[in-house]
View 1: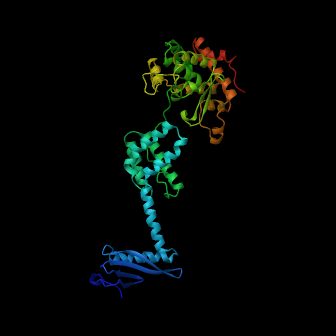
View 2: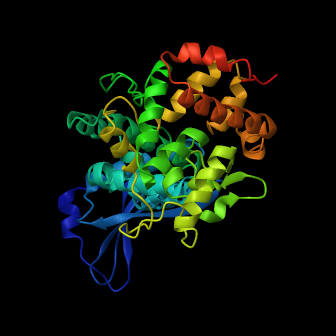
View 3: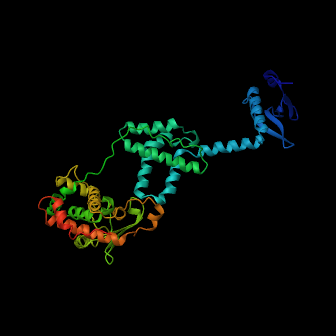
Length: 411
């Protein structure tokens, strides 16, 4: 006979525990101390089982019946209700521990070995500033697409569209990492392509090749300071500003006339060899007289990092009248334009610029690829710059035509 709330309230304890049934295997056990415990009895694979559902009155009669019915549904599907209950409890605990912040930090720690140290720190700082305050404490399984959209859009509304895009990519990577480990089922940041306004792609300022003679003349007119040396080496090596200013003397191989940059200092986290032309060696020899006893080529006692700042080259170009017209990165673009126009093989140029190879395995094992061709190209480009400087009588096109008689293209 089914129980009622009034009957349950009137049940009194006895010397020994006893049970009163409600139906469908559900019963209430009354202990000698007066406790009233819900029990559900059932058979699983022919064996009797007992499941503890809860304590009355915290669990009411109606709730106990609901729990019984839910367990019976599980039993009908062939699952063990008690075992499934424990699994669900463990899963809830597991999900509570696997918050977005914990998984993001775990992902960064795992990726740290393959990321540039500066970039890894930048990623963590951005996550701490923009993402963790909003969804960091939430379990991965509870984060929805609207949650991610709100985070990304809030960053974009502050006018930092590029940061918002990068945060969207980082969030997606964390979820992809978590899903691969079975910690979540879906990636709420997987397809959010249209939530941010499109922005025009910004290119690093760079002069046209026709302006090269004037640029070289203004650089040569400077006094022999670190800025001039840095600018000239950037022209002759095609490296990025950060790779140049933090270069230690230990990376220069004088015997091979090469600059070996380790992967830790490269944007693509891949070691890079820079062939050094005669002109680059001369500049380095001059710098060696100044900072040869220091760690960094461009040592600066005024800097905490012991080398010149990232803005040295940019500020030098601005003082020469090239504000918004030329940047340190622009020398890479300028060299690429000129060399492509002179029909050097694109693969050779791209390898010298240390751009990422589409075939990452090939890129990882062939940092010296095209080294002989690159040595030839870098020396010819340095000679070309000298020729333009000495023969700056008007248009680069005319100069180039004269020089092309000796400026050989690679096969």
